[in-house]
Image (tube, rainbow, N blue to C red):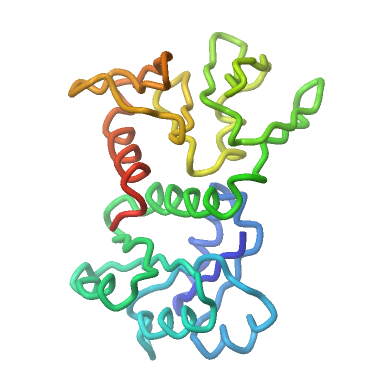
Amino acid sequence: MTVWLLEDEPAAARQLQDFLRLHCTYADDVRWFRSLNEAGTQGAAAVPDALIADIQLEEESGIDGAEALSRQFPGLKVIFLTANPALAQDVFASLPQVAAVLFKDMGWEERLKRYLGKLYAELDSRNARLRLDITATPLDLPLRGIRYIAHDRNDTMIHRVSGESVRLRVKLEDLLPRLDGRFLRCGKSFIVNLGYVDGVDGPQWNYFRLGFETVPISRAYKAAAQEAFHEWKGGLARG
């Protein structure tokens, strides 16, 4: 997945690059540009899947830059990052391809991770795979075939759509960076594929329903689970 950064502050750009490298490993081609002109010259040979842009650049409008790049690359998804909510009022009306506007003081990191993960899932949902070479037998599974993942003591069980399960000696923390935005950690011991969630158990939000199965939602993860579920089912929403 190719992601372009339109940001004129080097420190902010480095922060984004570090975040993407650590938490969005599927974004394997990240390019930083200080201006629209720089993007047009240095990025001419590449086609971006997503653009993360600061709305207010020092010498130009990030909105104008995103609009120009959207004309050049139809289908480009735009995510704006800003510290000033007032600047975001007319963004969605002027740029329908905007996926989200994230505010820097409102937990943008987790939101950005979810939005990019969802975009990646849409781009590569049929081909994305879970590959592990940290086990005795290398694992290679299509992500679309995983319903949920559960950890119990020393073992992690990957429950597949086929009804089969794969038992691994691996921590959930080792699996999370290899999954995309359709997967949500909903407890200390559970990760669920939101694509297979039919609903919740009611106003208490204690369980996700996956057909005849249920996956528990821990109290500490409940607020994040509610937000992620609504965003997933309702499509990409404003940050």
